[in-house]
Length: 206
Image (cartoon, rainbow, N blue to C red; front, side):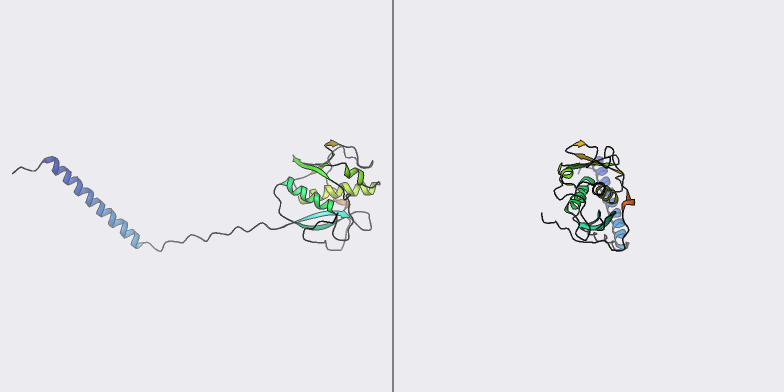
């Protein structure tokens, strides 16, 4: 009968040690698992609310003249300053839905807007100049209804530049200097005790 091989003895000892270690670790893990409290449940996922409509403020001419008055308007959500500024501009062109007077010709068109630094540039079509009635009051109301409406809805815009067909212009009708970008002038707002009109988005019939 052959004696035990020393190598086999070593191997048996190693295997026995591994088994004992596994049993000990398994017992410790099981003990820890049984003694721990209830597994905390993850908080319920918060539902991200859908973006609702956006309320903007527009300036139109007062019915009795002599200044601008505010009108609130509810529009669909928009993304990015340029896109939102175009929405504001489009609503100005649509005109008021209350008792205020329009300031821009209903034929007004624009090629686009762009924002750089603190200045928003609006490139109008020639229809703005051609359709605007003559007179300093009409020109002032048209320009500052745009500038004030943009500035009050977008505080990052400090100045508004007017272009026509991509080119700078001196004035619209010979009164107000438009060679430089204009800051808003809220002193043109006429005080009124009436509550601003709020309405869902709608378009005037052309």
